[in-house]
Amino acid sequence: MMVTVSEVQTEADFEEVAPKKAWTQVAMDLSRKQPLGVFGLAIVLAMVVAAALANVVSPFNPLQEHFDAMLVPPGTDSYLLGTDEFGRDILSRLIYGSRTALLVGFVCAIVGSTAGLVLGVASAYFGGLFDLILQRVLDVFMAFPLIILALAVVATLGPGIENVMIAIILPFVPQCARVVRSNALAIREIPYVDAARALGFSNARIILRHMVPNVMAPYLIMLTTFLGQAILLEASLSFLGLGVQDPIPAWGLMLTNASEFFEGSPWVAIYPGVAISLSVFGFNLFGDAVRDTLDPKLRSR
Image (cartoon, rainbow, N blue to C red; front, side, top):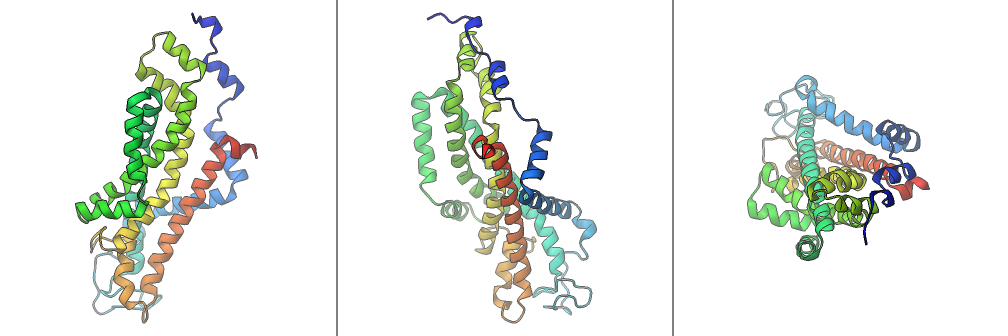
């Protein structure tokens, strides 16, 4: 059947039916309808500021050892949160540890979700044997729990922050690819995509101009979700001795070193645990707010 330009619904026609929200409007909706999301964003911004200005706000060098002030209680001798077993200032190590947490969190979330975006869109658009093989490969990765797969990868590659990032990124890719693919399959069948093919547009142009922009909402939702998960995974791997190695400040590593001193000096373990919980809590609150704002079904409620 011949398809004429006049008979085809264009992308603009669909935009008139379901106009896209401006980012400013999304921000206003987020602050008005999602106060918990704003609170989560405030926690995230506080972490970013502390990490960026660590050299300024940190009272001590996080690596400097004070053997005359080992396991000093909080609020003693200018040590606001006390010191660890080597006399290192806990507050300073927490501030510098936020750099490690944010570095791993943002790199793993962005790389993992972006790789999933590319694979998900490509799988939905091309379909056929490529889609079948790719989905079976992703099934293999998704058959393992996230922490088990990360442990297997980092145990194979060895400890270190670079290997930890690889171990966290790999489980994120299939999760995002599946979500993006399910949305891209529906978009592939919309008439303006068929019209673009009929007009002779290249696959790259159709994917970049019509497919990718319409799956950005699930992509952003997965991205914000992965941020908190990445921080928690990095802390878990460091706690097990497979992540960041001493003396680099890392919250999970601080918990490991504090385990044998918890009974007599509980603050050594309490503050890193609070930092991990608060950061994951903030990212999760912000991610939930982004999901509720961008998801049409949840927004309509």
